[in-house]
Image: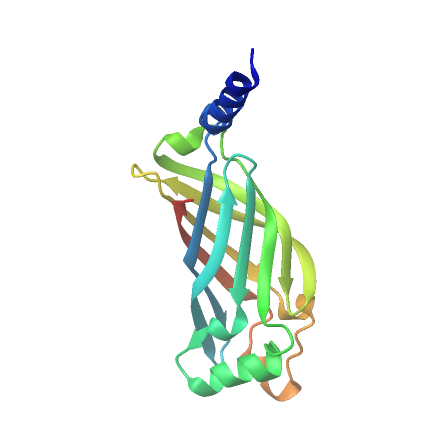
Length: 187
């Protein structure tokens, strides 16, 4: 086999090799939605963030989220200001992250439309403090190949070093309900 023929085979193989590998089941969004809700007899506090970035690799079950703290929106501007400056210190800790794995999703199910109960376990970093959490949820595989992930869990501000001043302690729940809703597109 001469050098030219060998070069053509290598070039041809280089282009065909990616076609022979299994498809990457990676999904992403930059418009995910995370909200939180605190309810006390004194006051209800609710905020929404619709600029959440997330990647889910169905092949390895890895999942990651990145949330800019300043992107949470409140009904009252003063609440938003206190949230960013006094509690979350978003100039020092600008984002929250989650990095973990999803379990309960049968292998190869991404090709089959349906809704599946799953659990995500990983490290949640808020206010610079990392905690391992386990979050129950659902993944819906749509006929068009997109995915929807939903989950709800509780977060204790004190677990992440978030200090609540005594004079407003009764206005903020000891546990905050966090709701996650992601609409993923195939990458």
